[in-house]
Length: 119
Length: 110
Image (cartoon, rainbow over all chains, first blue to last red; front, side, top):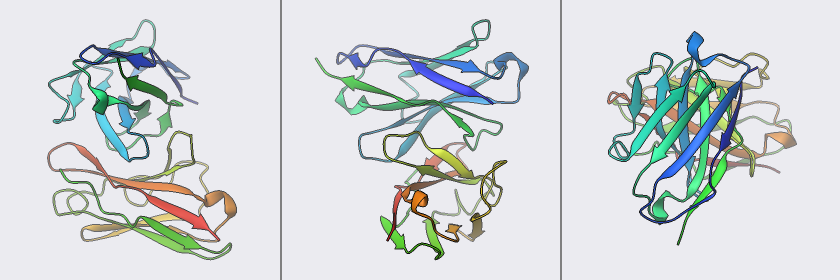
């Protein structure tokens, strides 16, 4: 069973970079077969897909965030990461890492981590 | 890409069946059979309930079923149980190679 766990700072100052890591267990990222994704959920709101990385290293980012987002992977540590630059209060949200055998759905989810952007 | 349209709330009594609709356009729901449904209890991560319109993840109760007609997808829950009370979100792959979500539906079990 694939398990995911997010980690990173819960508080980020405006204009700084939000950095989160997702540690994967129960599957090898380098074996292929899964898309490794980041999503977020603003307080009391719906879900938003930020982007994903495939084991080959290919990435896809949401057009609305593309200029500020980088998703990378470290297969030796079985981890993938999210960097979101120039954050504002509008980036305050619960951030989830997730995976799916298709790019269009998410079978496995981390528990989520709340990131607050505030000075 | 605009969000998919879901009713804000639906309700039903234990044992009844309910259906949640998810309306999009010919550029998302109507374009592909790539509609998914997620259940989210308060403070918890979403859980995949249906993918590719009608497929259920292994081990999931067959009380949950999905369908699609034109630009509208639907999630039906039969034999409603108290633990089904949660928020439900639909999502669809789009012709822009993005994923779009619905605004969510709060299911209340009376």
